[in-house]
Each structure stands twice: as C-alpha cells, then as structure tokens.
Length: 193
Length: 160
Image 1 (tube, rainbow over the protein chains, first blue to last red):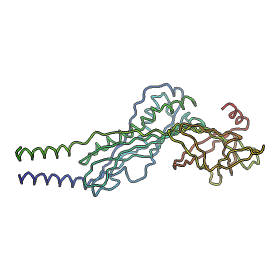
Image 2: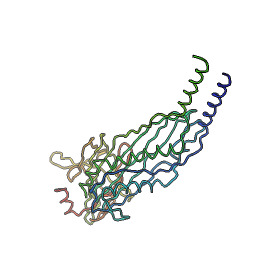
Image 3: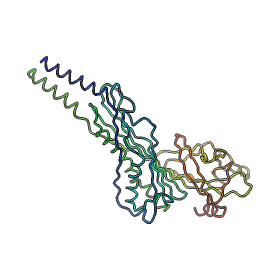
Image 4: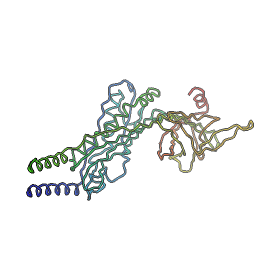
C-alpha cells in the first residue's frame, strides 16, 4: 500500500513540474474557409491583405506557476496566411485577384488571437479568442465588420503544440468563416458592385 | 471493498482526469457591422471651409456613438460635426459633440442638416479624402470618400 502511494505522489509531482515549467511553443496559424460558390464577384477584381494588429509578445500562456505570459508564439507570417484565406473565399465568390487597382479592396485586421491559461499550479482552463475587423471598400463605400469568436477549453496536463495550434486555427477559421457567411456583407457587395 | 480495489479505483480516476480534457467549445460573439458611404464637396477657389456628408448604416445590435472625425492625412486640417437648425426663420449651425446611430439604425448627413465642416483643406473633384471616424467605444475606422463637383454632389443629394 505504501509503495502505491509513493508511486502516486511521484506521478503527481511530475505533473506539477510539467505544469510549472512550460517551454515556449510556436504555432503555425493557417486559417481555412469553406465558402459555397457564388457569382457575386463575377467580372470584378479584388485585392486582399491581412494586417497583424496584435499587441506584441505572443498569444498567451500555457499556464503553470512559472509560465511566461508570452510562451505561445506565432511561428509563421500571419498576414500572409490571412491573405491566402481571404483569396480562398473571394475566389469562391468569383472575384479575380489582382495586386492593385482592384474594384474591391478587402483588408482583414487581426485584432485578437489568444490562447491563454491562468498562471496557476495546475492548468485547468484555457481562454481562447480570435477577432477580426474586416474592411471592404467598393468605390466610395466602405463596409466594416467586426467578428469575434471565443473558446473554452480545459486541460489538466500541458497541451501539446499540435493541440494549441489546432485550437488557434479552429478559432481563427471560424471567425473568418463568419465574415463570408455575413449576409450584410454580401448585400453590401451586391448594392455597390 | 478491499484496499487494493480502492487504490485501483483512485489510480484510474487520477489517470482519467489527467488524460481527458473536456470538449472544446467555440462561441461566436455578435457581429458588429457598419456601412459608411459619403462624399465631400469640391471647394470653390478661395473658400476656407469644405463640407462632407456621410451615411452610416449600423447593422449591429448596439448603438454607435460617433464622437470625432479626423483627417489622418493632414495634421493641420480638422473636421467638426455640425447640424443646422432653423430658429425664428434663421438657419444656424450648431456644433455637435456626438452623433448617435441607433442599433440597426441609419444616419444620413446632408446639406441643411447634419454634416461635417472641414477646415484647412483644399478639395478638388476626383480626389479622395481620407477620414478617421472615432467612436465612443474607442474604435477607430479609416475610410476614404470621393470629392465631387458641385453638380455631381447635387445629383448625389437628390438621387443618392
């Protein structure tokens, strides 16, 4: 019996140590959108870009008592990834991408992206969120749409890099997807194109 | 129940707590949309003040309060929000500290009503004027509006 408790105590200590000393992880963020085909942009050109407006220092903490507040970091060019996802959706709407002088200009400002755990001994809950301010300009008319998604997760052990990356990508994809499902945005395009 | 079975149950519980995390939940916050269209009027030679008219369509479930309009491309210039009131048969301009756009509401600026007065600018037809809208919640939105000649601006007013 004493032996079993010794093993249990050792296991608990190992878990605590793992929670205390999380090393930084770099996540590759590549949002994806799934946009049904539409002829809304047929015959029109579009230019799109992503802008990283996140405050510096990372996406958040993996938790643990010694956790740094910025030990979840971006491992790729998020502006490029956002642009790729935007074109993915806009091409489904039949727009033709061009670099300049486009009929429609689309800018996605990334205003929030976080994966954060409280700095406690055990990591029990994870606060995640993504926010995008989309700006669509057609001639002298501008559409602004703010889309935000938040997530709740629970982890009792240190999440793997893949888990963190999957959560962040899922959130950002869901946020961008909402923009492409926004009927007001489509109505704005139909009105001004 | 024997001590061995109790310990096995305890070990099983601890392991399941450690290995299983609850389902991940994603929750979408209400989208906040705003459409802005508008134009500025070309200024005749020698004029010291210009005017611009915006239409704001608030597609959000909450009201928006426009508190300031800036001209980000010209630090010497400024924009002031005004409305025109008729008192005893005389039209007077009155500065506004705030313009509210109701939830899912619309505000249309036009000559003789709410408008923007522009100081320190020279506006020529065909140019674009950059504006920055500053809202009470701290959000700022940058946009550009076309500068129209007096004739096309009048056309816009009657038919736009």
